[in-house]
Length: 202
Image (cartoon, rainbow, N blue to C red; front, side):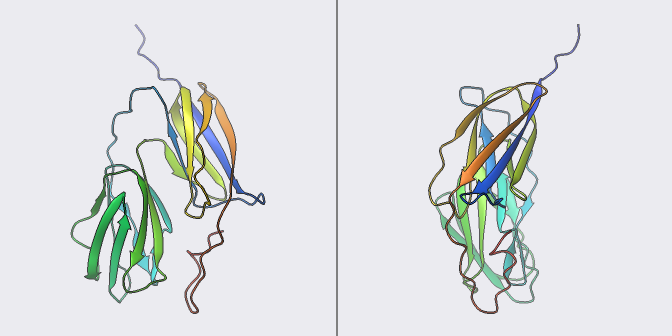
């Protein structure tokens, strides 16, 4: 008897704004309604750096149950916090790397700030699915997706309103293409003298 083979597919999402410009840092995740929940996968610690008085990356996407470390690579201290319902926490004034990572155990958007430097801002998107990725130059690719029916979810820290999930079918040995348009709020204002590298993503 031959071993069972899992049929897989791939998905490519093209994310653009209302003017047709490619959107960076959009988080695409896929769920399979009505299907058994996939087995949890091992989650290595993710990293949210602090360098040059900025968080890096601006947007971090992780699965539920992922620990995140917050190393401070500056020669000054930071005070990281979040009041978001998906994760309320704070790491009081510190330098170096805190001994314990922060466990992100609920799905949702987590907005990060620094109590010392008001311009510092970052976002952690916690998803309850193993199929997710962040857009680069407007493109998201998710591979090794079991064939079946899915909903495509899209989140961006500047979107003006929630976007209804997009249904699609993924067939074996097929790459599905999906185009998604976003209406975005203006980019955050940057205080004079603040490096703009993370606040104005391309």
